Length: 511
Image (cartoon, rainbow, N blue to C red; front, side):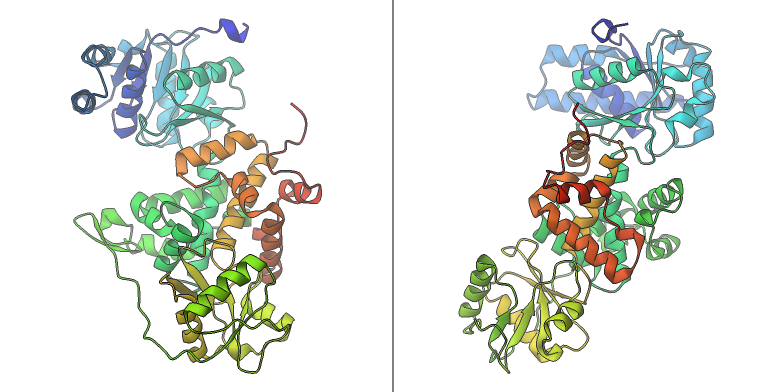
């Protein structure tokens, strides 16, 4: 049947009246489609309908929903007290427990009741759609339809194509999503689909940095919020979602990708889960909570020191030199302009993908008075200095005070290839490039899905364009050289586009 002739869905059955199920039901009832909501626990159905009614009435009270629209939406939201009552639905969306056997059993029961052309959709976030469909009599009508919580507000849904899913099913689900105001991110049946896959780099690299003792969780969060523009730091996010949930996803993806080092989970996370340090819901995670409210520790304020040294900077970038020079003037100091530092100068190096020790050694600088300055992030909100083991602590204190002369906070972290921001951003871009290389998502779909679902300031490929794809490649090569691990191997998608001077969104072939 031509795509233009594909029918719209007339009635939707939602199975599972928890947070996701009731949200999905509200979304489509608000979009004009009659919905029947079923749950094996009868009392849960009415609780969900009452919850939705309250939300909609609150929206009407605020003037966001007219009286007629409210009445019509509530009329379209109906209870189903048995699976038999869903027989007339042409789309069935399951939002039950995340268990393969339970979903397979439910779809078998539904197939015995609904029409042969009814579509069966799973809201699974981590299970294989192909495996869910494998026990069905008609697997071609099964697809993934993965929403994000809360479904009415998160304007994205992943439309997942199983190995045997009919393309007409994907088209119809995508059109339904658009009718409800959601972006349909179409993906093949791949571990983590698009969003959970792309989101692994942010969390796993942050855990790696913490595990290496490079910076504290609070430091990493502050650096990534202020320096890179993320709404929440990775450890704030772990505490919000629950580390047990996040760690389970990390372990699942690692196994589904057959132990690819890119997805290696952190033993630190496993230990914290075992200890019950799950985040807000347990009262303590990477931060402490009281009555669900974060008890944030004040940032440490170092004791003032006497500033009596000039500074020297390895970078010849005029903008950076001007910025640093102006800071030092405010502190009553000078930035030397000679090719080599004087005998008293505190030396600042600006490595890209290297650690401070490597850069200092390469330049032949005196280690006891040399440290690194991060030039990759936003220097107007937070600055990052990186010490190395030979640095004189008194000179570290002078550098910290001098570079914060205008009141901008200065973090000091331990030596690391790529600081914090470089490592995390490069990992996000690299994984995004790998997702594009594998055909899991188009470049445009990938970036939009990640921004909508995860709230990143840029999508993975747009991050690469913002910071410069060649710089990202340099960082990854430095990380790989430092650690000798395939974890940091650059994606061919990234390497080829840097070599050919193409944007990261450039497809492999013309459409």
